Length: 519
Image (cartoon, rainbow, N blue to C red):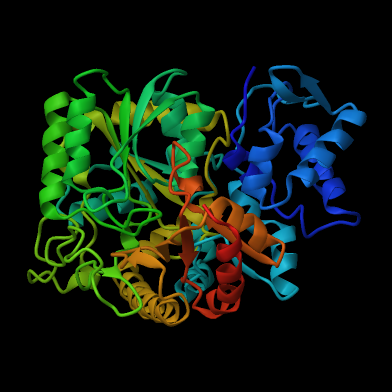
C-alpha cells in the first residue's frame, strides 16, 4: 500500500487550523476528508502515524487521535493492524500526491492576509508598468495581420519565436526560430519536458534543494528522483555537485539531469565559472541529456560575491560560497564592455553542449509579470516538435494576444532587467537588515539572484513551524518542499520581492513558532 510522508501531508493541510468552526480535531478531520474527496490523496493511502503527524503539525497527539477517530467513524479511514490507518473515499485515478504548491494564490490565503496575517508563501513579483504600456501600444493592425488564419500556432507566432531566438543570438548563443517552442510560462515547459522525455521509473538527477514545481512535474510522471549536492559549504550548485554526478554515473545512467545554474530557486545562488565548466565537462563526457531551467536567470542581481550573513554581517564560514562577482553567470567579466551587467543577458550553461542533448527553459513571466503567461523551450528542432505534439493535446496554442505583447516586451528587456535588479537589490538588503536585527541567530547566504532568502532556523523543525504559523495567519513555505528527499527541515524560504512589510509583520510570529517547533 502507498504511504504519504508526514511532510508532504503537512504541505497539503493548509489553513485547516485557523478556518472553520468546531474544535481542532474536527477541523483536522474535515481537512483530511476534503483531501480524500477531492482526490488530492489517493484512495488506499496509508496516513502517517498519530505521533508522527502530531509532531509535524505542531499539535498534541490526542488531537490527531481524535481526528483519526472521527474519520474512522465516518467511514473515511480504515485501521489495519500492523499496517496503519488507510484513507478511503478518494476518487483519484492515480496514486500521485501533489504538494498544494499554488495554495498561496487561492482565496483562503488572500483572505488570511487581508485579515491581518502575512503571506510569505510565494516569491512571485508584482508586474512592471512596461506590461501595461505594451498592451496599450497594441493596435488593430497588430492583431489584424494574424486574423487571416485560424489563430492556432502550436509552436508560437513566428515573430515571437524569432524574437526569442534573437535574444539568444545577442547573448552569443547561435539559435534559429525552429529551435524555439512558446509555452504558457516556464511551468508548462517543465511539465512538457517531463511528459516527453521521462518514462515512469526513469532516473532523473536533480539538485537538492531545487524548484518545487519541477519536483511535482517529475514525480507526477513517476520519475525516480536522485539528488546531488546539498546546502553545505560545497553545495548549492558548485563543482562538488558535478563530482557527485560523475560518481553516480558509475552505477546508473540518468535519463536526464535538471539544473538551475543561474539564480537558483530557492537558494538564489549562481554557479561560478569554474563550477559551470566542471558541469559542462561531466555532462559532455557522460553524454547526458540536461534540462537547464533559466526561469529566474533574468533576476540575477550581478553585484557583490555571496557571503554567509548573520546579525553581525560576518561570513559564518570564512569566505564566499563560490560565486565570483566577475564570473557569476557565464565565465565572462560582467563589465567587459558590453554595456554593464544590467545589459548582459544570461548565457545558458548548455550553450556549450550538443543541441540535441539539451533543453533550455526560459520565461518572461518572472521578470515582467506572472500574469503574462509566456515561456519557452530552446532545443533541437526534433525535440521541439516532440514537445509541441504533446502541447497541442493540452491547449492547441498559447494566446496570440499575450504573444504579441511579449514581442514588444523583448525590446524592453535591458530596461526591465535594470529596473528589476535595482528593486531586488534594495529589497534584499532591507530584508537582510531586518533579519539581522530581529533574528540574529538565523543564518542565510546572500542570494546572487531571485526574490527570496533561503534561511536556516537553527534547532527548529520548519514543517511544524509553518503549521504553527498558519494558525496565527502567517503562510510560509518550509525547506522540505524544495527537496526531493524531504530534507532541509531547518530551512525557510522568505520572499522579499514585494518589500519587507509582510516579513516585518510575520517575524515575531515566526520567532515565537520557531521556539515551539523544536527539531
